[in-house]
Image 1 (cartoon, rainbow, N blue to C red):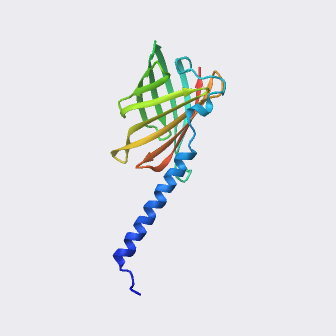
Image 2 (image 1 turned 135 degrees about the vertical axis):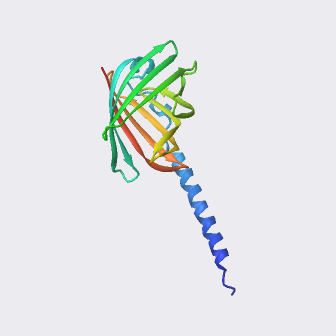
Length: 187
């Protein structure tokens, strides 16, 4: 019997790894919740009501191992004119650095939302249902003196008229980088 060459073995391993990665992605995709899963949950989140006025938020960024890498606070000043909203976020990080992000949101007739900010690549796309809001976007994130584009899968859950919890998974090329967890408090 003829022994396989190194090149043949490497090709078989590459095909097997690709098949396993595709199967894993398919399984993960099947298990993901959809915003409509929360349609019956109360209290019902109305973004224009909750994100109106001043809010305080407290958050952490955890790396893929779950270690807290950064803590931060946010003061948000929010306003709406009809279906157009502005969320002005002022971040203060545990290392003393600061950052500002101004979201410009648009509510569409079908209940979807789109949003733009200076460090968001393209448009953020979102949908509200029941007590939940889900949106996805690509953020141009400064890391170690350079900027990388990171995809966010962002979920918000209204707990009561004053408190909302937020959890966002960060990925680059489909690989998990970490998570952002926030709690919002409406003043």
